[in-house]
Image: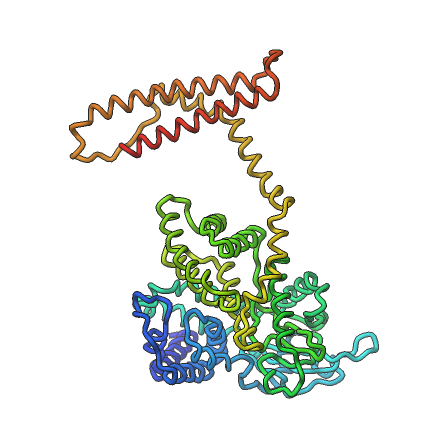
Length: 557
């Protein structure tokens, strides 16, 4: 057995023992609360949930960086875990034992072939924050003869190798253990782990985070309420990132700070920024937990840690706005159209009808509430549950958006008790909504559809002639499911079908002739452009209507 294999088995045994000792395999399953038909809407004792949270926190800290990050991800899943469990897991944020300064100097030298004190005028050996992947130190950097206070984030030594090993073990555990439990029917565990792994690998490449910060700065440079650190690219690499030092108080520690902050104003400014990030830019900071949001002296806010970002395409932004419009006007059809527009739901008549009926049940419940009473966390959770119930796979783009909104709502409530995120976001989203459904926007979206219609009309004569020839040659066959109860009427059905086929062929021939005549190069005085268009349209309508009649006839049979 190779050293790698021995290391793998040893680490796997350590993880399994830790999980069994803490009772995590059993307790996590009992704490899942989204799948009511499996879990019977069980009520949990608050104290037992706190104990579970403490066990998870302690176990994850003991198992190291990968599990600390796993716990941090779990702390954002308010749709899965109870408030008591989440409150314990939130303590994992930036609360990990630091590594020695010697190790930090070693990693820095490997990246730049320079000693830390050859680069910085001063460097604090004691970290200002210690995370699971890296720790941050404040330092003084001289640039063009001027001293700037900076924050230097340095990765833990060999962290990527350790995390890769743990990920491989987690993949193995999901295949061998969790996929055989009810959890596999509730969540796409493999996909969740894949997303977790991808996010973790992105976080371990500070060059990616640096690019994220530069892009975010470009989009938000005019936002006077939200700040972000300046990047010093010369001393930024895969494992080291040097940025402007943000002198503020994290929202996580705001209650312990004696400063006189207007928390309601802070909540408004935070929501204003995020609504713009979501719908104006389609590029947003996707990790807004309290430790990543700093409050400055002038009631301004600063975002830090750009390792995880979210993106929304123009289409996704448009469809999400349609969902909010559907909620506002109690129009399930708008929401269904948006889900179809995202490519999540097939436009099959049965599926859509059932989906809209279930959707209306959800809407009826929330439309009785005022904006102040609405909780986006609950709405998103129920919407995602509905998608899962219809076996609709939630794409990572939509999941990232939903997760960010859920975390953001928690931050807003932390700033202002019982404050609704919907109430704050509504007037801002309303303005952006007008832009999304403005005349110019709708015109831009309509032009491709008009071109598609023109293409159909243009190709219709050739298509109809081809169809007619296939009917004539017997190239089109019709398959009908036979039921022995109807065998007596077989001859009657065959006669009707033949009659319909002949009628359809003649109709296609007639409409095709109309269209061909209209668009041909023959110039006749009384045939004006408008008349040509009318002929084309009439021919197309005849073919479409008769095709529908023919289709319904076959379905009826």
